[in-house]
Length: 202
Image 1: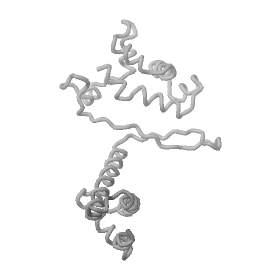
Image 2 (image 1 turned 90 degrees about the horizontal axis):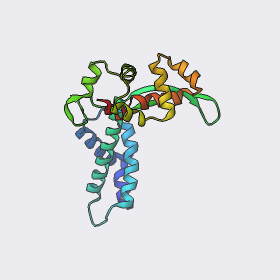
Image 3 (image 1 turned 135 degrees about the horizontal axis):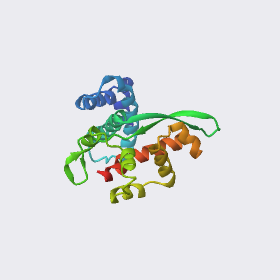
Image 4 (image 1 turned 180 degrees about the vertical axis):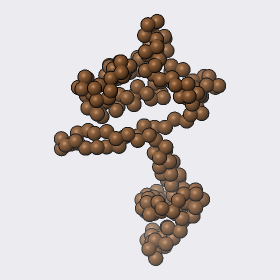
């Protein structure tokens, strides 16, 4: 074990960094995050030391562990970059108001809607359909089964926010009317417009 440790950490961890560089080059990841991945490689190395089978090659085992970890890290970073970010203010543990960034997961515009392979989320966005317009347009004729199913997915607070949005209230007016925080409003708004909930309408 000590021999392996010395081999990988000699000359400022040259062997570990070289292996990390080789994997990052293969994954086409930019150089500006290299130090982050070196830190991650340290964690993976010591975990690999505890779990590898001494009868097998440590080099091969470590490479496999690093490759998998780097792939999952890169996937997470790319997903976060594609997400919509909104700023919300909420009370911290000390009672002070702090600003935090919340992420709304992305959805592919080319993803088919339900069983209809010819209809995509992009088509719906292009034709200007919104939850609010669907709710408002159908008010006179009564709600469809799809709209009822959609509304059943929402909590009481989310329904109240949607009702006020449909009536033309502004976000600050809704928060005042319902006596809710910015975070509660942001959570409700995200649920109201989430693809998972909205997709049942189309």
